[in-house]
Length: 153
Image (cartoon, rainbow, N blue to C red; front, top):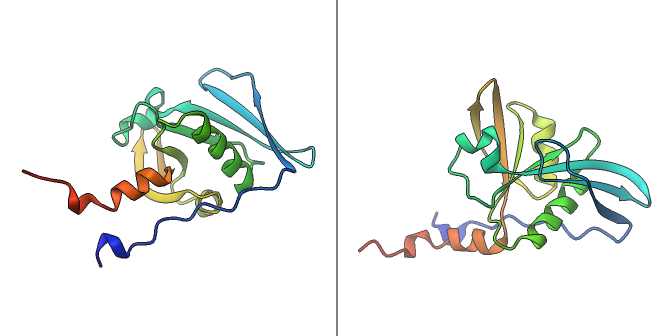
């Protein structure tokens, strides 16, 4: 199977306007916090940090603009999706969003996948074993399909 045969991950359909994402004051250790509502009712909160400022930076070759997305327990897939779209729209130089869940957390992985993330790998950081999921802009996914075309000489 060549890289041309691989389907790119399809991002979920846009959410209706009944879903709203509101920035909140950041808390210690996070660069941004977003509260999400559906029809005016709280749906969850997501904290966001640059990966390079977290222990996850040691787990993979993180880019300077990569972001760690950390949803609270109430945040379902639509909440993660909406915040992810907001973060990517606000920073076109961000090449990757990372969602970290405890290794073996099948429900957490499923929630991330429903939000448009894809499982990448399991890693160990001090004191924890994590499963990392990633979401990348279509331009990054498209570029990675053409790795065989990269000149080597």
